[in-house]
Image 1 (spheres, rainbow, N blue to C red):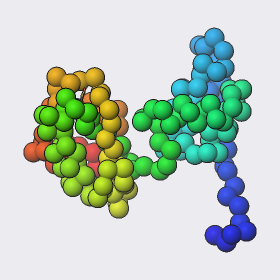
Image 2: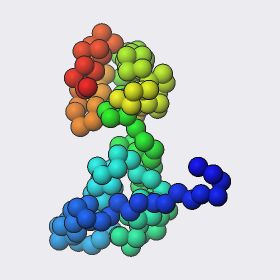
Image 3: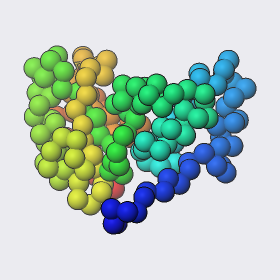
Image 4: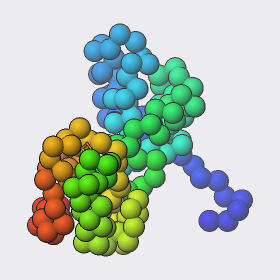
Length: 166
Ligand code: FES
């Protein structure tokens, strides 16, 4: 792309996605309360939440883009850049850390081929990030893959677990 070309943002809120958002309105007291579900709709449709989508969500809900961005960047489950087909979150906070979470994170990075935490594998299959306490400190090491919660993960279990996510 040349320096003079501009990126045209293809609106996410149209057709089915807009219909889904509008169907949610009656379930909430006001539009701003729909922020989290609206962001999920964007991520479901696009795989991640771009600056353009943040502006769109703000427009739909009567919020400022800065407010929406603050929420998007607060939660690790919202992606601010493209990620792999399967999104892996591993807890490395101290209680899990002393139970070997760093070794689990290393095994995940190694077996996914991601190369580093936060990176995506070359085949686009996986992204691995480390996150703060997942509220399952008694089941170290907990890992979330997409919508699945998996407890007591060890480095040895990693290949078998990853095989479930083609
Ligand atoms: S510290 Fe890992 S789940 Fe709480």
